[in-house]
Image (tube, rainbow, N blue to C red; front, side, top):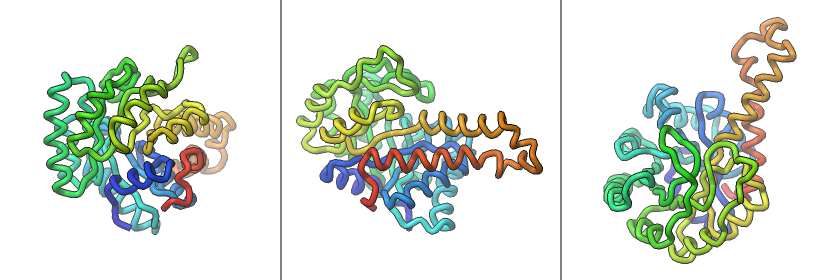
Length: 288
């Protein structure tokens, strides 16, 4: 199956009260694990690259060709969108040119008027090529590729203005953060989420920082309009833990256990299993 825009899958998720899992990839193993997990779950999925991960992997064209070719070679039949996560203006335009089927322009750290103007141009160029667009209002807490957010609550009125540009889904700060959640985290602001959902007239909403949010809060957020949930940190954690276990047990010293195909296998399996579990949490299993 060819890569698809995320517009239709997120719209269906909003209407059906489930969410699309959007999983960040960092290499070949993670990309395969995400695709295998989605295929086993019969779920539509979004594979995301941050700007930093794309640079690490060799550039956006490498990422595009990797995902596209794996879909073909692995016989993947579920809908897959390739998405730029937290892209700046120039990177969003480059990904549209390269062939990504979905992009996020993150101008949340900019003055609102500048965010608005750049978002307009991204939407114009993306939609001309059938590419879906995500924008953000109210920065997400934590740090992502040098963009630092304090976890502010988005203004519903500003969300409405951005939504009216014709974007396909909207990320809004509702107390969520990137990375691991601290022990004193007070939880998601469902009051803010409800207000944003009401004023944006059924637009699919995005929950960033999906790693570590209790499942009860995840499900409530979905019931209020969240239709895309980003997962990255948890994949990193389970990959690292499984790899550490393999080495600490000395398996890399047994026979050809040092072979990277064997060394990376436990972490890859752990990512696949997490993808399947989160897809079940999000309710998108069987929705392909």
